[in-house]
Length: 101
Image (cartoon, rainbow, N blue to C red; front, top):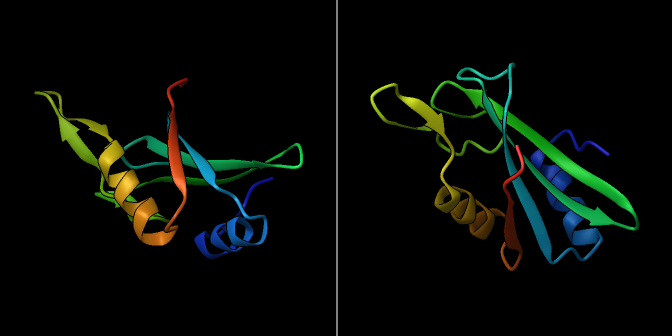
């Protein structure tokens, strides 16, 4: 089930007493650069997720910065930035990273 806004995502986490969210980085053709992220959790057999994509130097919804590395300036999202965001916006929630892309 897609959650459209960060506020709705946070509200669902509180109402379902979620203790862990998962983060998945992925290519996203809507993004500029073409990179994105999903934050998601499971509740009663359903996956609830917030899809976010790059818009310039940050993700559009969460405003997590997009970083670049290497001579080709490959975009990436830092795990530390995601952890910091989760700690600030979703205090008490653990984040686990999903590496399947």
